[in-house]
Length: 207
Image (cartoon, rainbow, N blue to C red):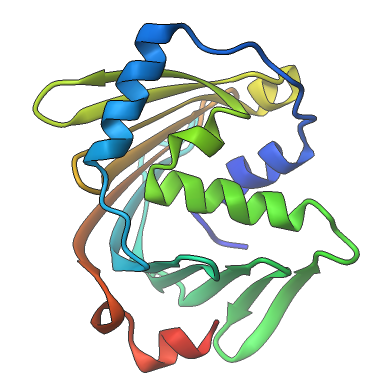
């Protein structure tokens, strides 16, 4: 699976989520203010540009493509370059396409964590901090826009992922993932559109 977020999502799915105490009141207040700033469209699509830096390699790996988040249905992540492929996550399955060919399929009936994987990815892209709070400690701040730093609650997840940070305004603009092994991923979102006209007929057919 060539993907900017799958590694962290699969790590989150494998980590055991434990009950945790409520965050302090000031953090809760900041999170609530950020969630109030975020738009909540039924459909959100746009471009992503990813820069992946691998420990020990001088040149980063660059890729770009389109993504769509459809409320109640799931996420489509379509890489255009350097290698065309599509990742579709719905409530019941994860499917990885290479062209028209299904390269991998995970079914929720055999893999119950599929639903959680979908939930985590949707939460990252839509900035749903309430759901992210189950897996991560949330450190949030507001200036002209907002910034959020995530620290894994589970030791298993912390071992796989060093830290995640997000920033944005009405939508998530940037995601930075720093893995414990030294690799890092930066994802920039742009050309964001919302509503029924944001998604193409081919993209809508994936759901």
